[in-house]
Length: 134
Image 1 (cartoon, rainbow, N blue to C red):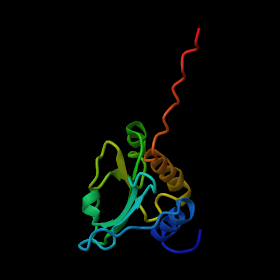
Image 2 (cartoon, rainbow, N blue to C red; image 1 turned 30 degrees about the horizontal axis):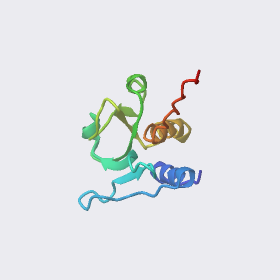
Image 3 (tube, one colour; image 1 turned 90 degrees about the vertical axis):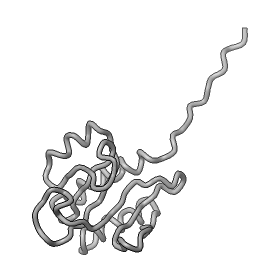
């Protein structure tokens, strides 16, 4: 990936891999970008700038943060790892936050992003089999 901010690299990855463009929905939060699964229009990621205190950290400078979705069990194990936090401003049972400051590598983020993308994909229905006629 190119040598620019982690936020920029991850946004570029989502555009290239999934064909999804950032949607900037809020005038009062112009840096917040939502990414949706094309068919379902469900969010699979949101990138925003937040104050460190929102994540229980100290400091004054805003942080780039991405929220993604995954299983509750996986969230529990990720939260003990540097750079991962309970979701800011989302359901903490299904979402978690990743600080995009390089403390979590792109190579670690991309598989989690793929899980989130897949989790909002429309579910395929199994074909019901007809009982054999006697």
